[in-house]
Amino acid sequence: MKFAYFTERPYRHIDEDIVLKHKAFFGVSNKYYDRKKGADDYNQFIDEYCYAEEVGFDGVALNEHHGNPYCMGNVITTEAAILARVTSKVKLILVGSPLPVIKHPLRVAEELATIDTISRGRLVSGWVRGAGSEQFFNNANPAYNREMFNEAHQFILDCWTKEGPWRYEGKHFHYRHVNPWVKPYQEMPQQWIPGVLSPETVQWAARKRYPYLGLGSALSATCDLWDLYADTAAEEGYQAGPENFGYLVPLFVADTEEKAQEIGRGYSFGGGQNGFSRPEFTLPPGYNSKGAIRAMAQASPGGSWLGISKEKLDAA
Image (cartoon, rainbow, N blue to C red; front, side, top):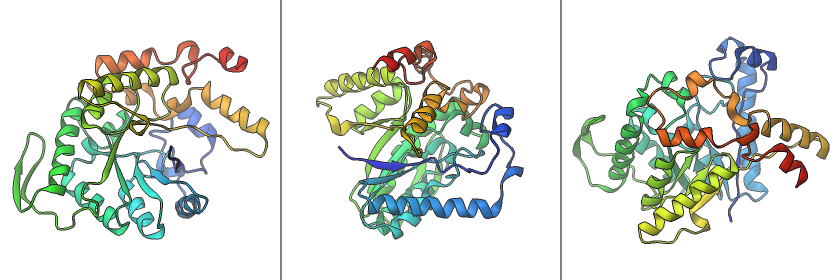
């Protein structure tokens, strides 16, 4: 089992009442941003990741969000490039590159290859479709999200493996001259799929033999999707093992055990990550399949973000 350190890198200087009044983090006005405090935050987060290497974590993980104070990591490859130089041992784990909203897979291929080269092969590249709110911020059509994801992913692999120059004419992307000079340090960088509760994504990952990471999703629903992964793997002729699964475990730290428990229970039974964006931004039409919507609707019985009731947890 491997352990990686992850934080959302939030902007921590905004009054909670402002977020509550807005009913979500996404869309809170940037008029509340302080440049000096933002610079302090960014540098502290980089220091935290370096310290994670010092204390023995196997990897440091980065994600990307846009347009809100919940996550300051709005250009994942910039942070990863910095960490590639200032760390020496930890894996640089991306959670991950939102291909359909970046809409420039050639640039992504070059950036990731550069990170892998500077780090001498420590990149673990994650592929994501981007949260629902990212479709609004980046002016991306959610109806074509999965199509663009699949096309961009395959194009990036081709950039890393095919000799150039070559021309590319796809459905969503077109390049007259493809010849990325810097190739990844690894013959093929490690890859995995961070996700929530999409059956289609789980099956896609299993067919590609990519590990699947549950992003703190409800436990019961996550276990069901792991079973689906294992069944799909069997259909593909291999047996899924521990190396095929990961889970983002929320940890709550405070000065006392009692305070940490209080914060953790408030998070777990107060909606978890549901405060990231309002429903109209989280679930744009065409973004989720019927199967994914059904899984999300059934994921939290009794209002528990964990997927188990508060009473059952109290009795444990």
